[in-house]
Length: 365
Image 1 (cartoon, rainbow, N blue to C red):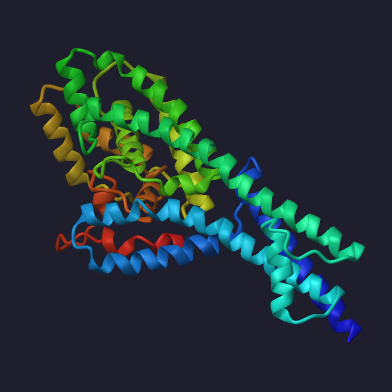
Image 2 (tube, rainbow, N blue to C red):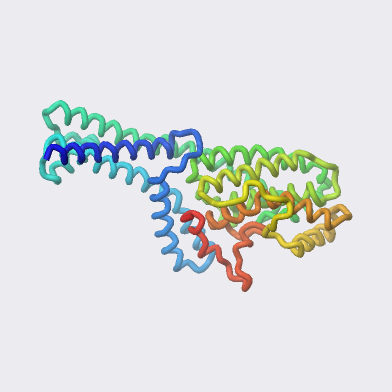
């Protein structure tokens, strides 16, 4: 009997400690760290949302449903933590003084939520009560304290995404960006875009790996997405570096590198496979015909291009291969809205959108 009580006490202590480490990895640790418990919560919630979306037949409806996914998951997470702490302390209370499980549940619940209606007299259980109350308050305080941080990062991310609509249209397009800059005689000033978005990618890398729930916070407007915005800017920088007949600007190269590193790090957190050292000749999701069509559209709108189209294609593909796989996978993971050369890669040859069905595949991998 004594051995069983010791085992149950240690099991309860282990549950409490694992729950505390889960909270620390999720909200406190200032670096990318996968937490199994948080992952299980988000995966389970995603399965429920995927089931509900079977009855949603338009992207607007699916987007409105998915807007609740991250907030609800974040609210469920501390509830799961509190439930596990309650269960762990139930085991420890019972191991110290065996009683009926309803009485043990009442004692643990009273301690966790600082209700105070169950007050044992012995010193050891009093110490456990104090520690459980402190843990319960700390877990709730963590969520409350970090929500402003998350929404601040979200607001900063979305401000830049919104500004992109002014330059690149909606959905964002590299062709539209260059056409507008050419019309305003500002092609030589594209460096300001690359500089701003290099900083944006660096902030995205930091915030979306240390607080990964941000990846699922959807833009205020259904047609916007941080993933498609990132893809449009990266494609624009790749086209500017490879195809546009304008003075060489190394800031475009730096923007591309900041971008593909950010997307790779975020993809890596979600266990999305990609080749970290792709060859410039590796296949990409953009076909040569699509590239030529884009170039023809730019020419028709007066944008100057380099004469050697074959070399332009090789240079563009050499840039795109660095971020092609993470970009498409993150568009799938977040159920991004339609945008050329990013989420439109999720379409079957027959033209029927696969975004509805592929929403959870990468998350489950």
